[in-house]
Length: 221
Image (tube, rainbow, N blue to C red; front, side, top):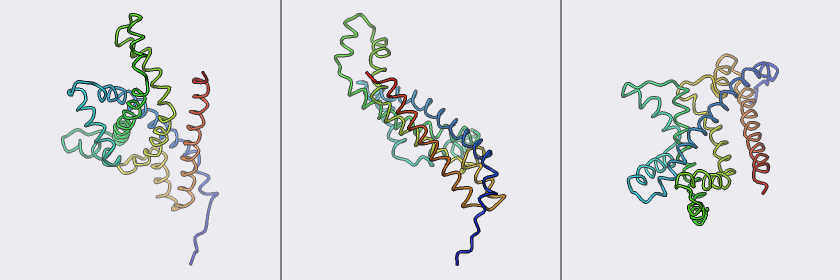
């Protein structure tokens, strides 16, 4: 017998708290993308290198990040390192776990973009007297970002959704953590998590829309 009584007015009182949690969620996602993106570029270059000493470590990172659960990676950052006397906060563990995961996926995205750039681009830059690093930075990297831009936004959305795993290591300041904390005090489970789902949906849609507008502005020609 269905006897649940919805109390949306009570749940709506906590919207400001959920908004604060959403900001923390967005902060973690953005930082994890910046860290993961920087590492991903290094891994992509390593994966395409001729030297096995550069290729093998990069391949190991990518394989581990892409073929193990993100929850496992977050657990290892929080509980695994604790076994060796290295204790980090739930926030840092979540950020580190998501950044590690992002780096693996972004490395493959960037590697695909690098392969899509004709080698003649680098040769032309070298013929103009550019050193290899300068040619890579000024010629290859801008084209790589252009090719990988929209796929990278999908990883951004994935990072936003992955922040919900922070509750498993005790994080209580992100959107899911705040929702769980309020639910423990009010027992309005359906209403609160429905509102949290709306927040996640809106954040993801805003990110995708913003990315498409930015791509249209930057890559019109």
